[in-house]
Image 1 (cartoon, helix red, strand yellow):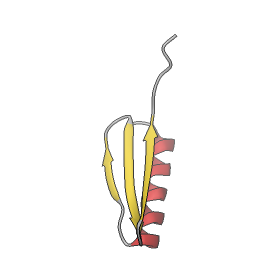
Image 2 (image 1 turned 45 degrees about the horizontal axis):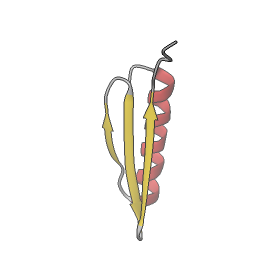
Image 3 (image 1 turned 90 degrees about the vertical axis):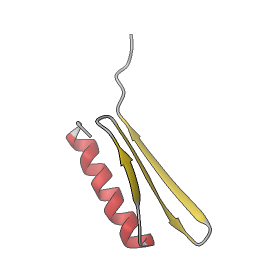
Length: 55
């Protein structure tokens, strides 16, 4: 991600979910990231998106 603060949040979430559930899938681009994890019948999805307001 281009935004350093959001990149830091993504990295933290990925690390935490990997530690808790043993894995964390990540798909990302310059302004979007989606993390997927879970276990025991639960699915966790976190979406981080950077948008500029049109106005």
